[in-house]
Image (cartoon, rainbow, N blue to C red; front, side, top):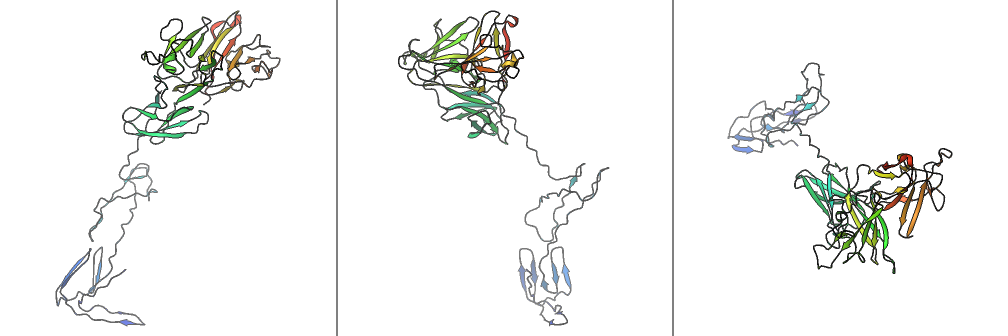
Length: 468
């Protein structure tokens, strides 16, 4: 909006056209100081008026009247790069000019000059912008819960490699197959290794990953896998369940490391829970029982003892190994396995004897269920022995707690007469292809039939591909 001030300066020019005429006269003089944020006028009485326009880069003065201040925009420079072989003309990228001058400009003061730099590719660069260094992928190094007391802790610690000061999200999912990740919490790293505690309570199956600031997620996973042994019936000595360690324990592979103070303990093995593991090289069980004095000997409460030696047990519960658990309680008992999710296949060696059957107590080595058919298992390709019937073929026996008995499957091989069925596992009771599933956290028997041409310990190795 223009503002016109009469300064009572000499005669100014009249405005006129063919249709109208505006004439006015002013008297020179008027002593005063007039000012605004952008200018100041000092005048004295009787001062002659200036005739004709006066101007600068920021204002025009015409015969005693101030015209509106006109700000002339700074023209956009047209750049012509000079390096040899480069294209000339206006660059396609528009530079962002950041002025270093004070926010308040004095009228008539030139704006600071910005000189763009043309790169060899013809792009304009100003103040360099630092490219953020992506955070390294976090690596989970430990999954742990306190199993030295009873009941065991309902929380889980997740430890991972970190960058000091950075923030990380910890997420969990209930399955490794098409997992749906949920936020468990965030933690700021306090060094190269950081621990996050999931307060849970963690009683269900749960797998973890860590996501760094910026979205980089850990490729390895940790988890918690519960396995329930149902209560024994009245009059029974114990309820059996065959378990397998489907996670790789972080703290050690012994029964004390894996199970800790889980189960019903007692002064002796007759009334305490027991774990039996089959040793195929000796054809006998290694047995351990849980000691609990009720506080009389606290240093030993929660310790698993070897039944034959009376010393603390060193029984191994590594992934791929199965074991019996004998629940002496009249209530269901849940055992919690925690550790790392295997990132590579777990090979399981299968022995073959020249004249005798060999029993293998195997635990499902991966934390996922595997249907026992050729589409999901590799027994046939890895070297399992098939036959026309179960008497000459390898077998898998899965113990079912609710039935208190086995589901048995055997491997068919007609030698090419029925190629559509060669390598298919059949249910021994129904005679149809089996629907048996090798369940995570559980174990089963593998019965390899004698074969003099393939005798060996091991003769072949079963390796199940990772399904996740």
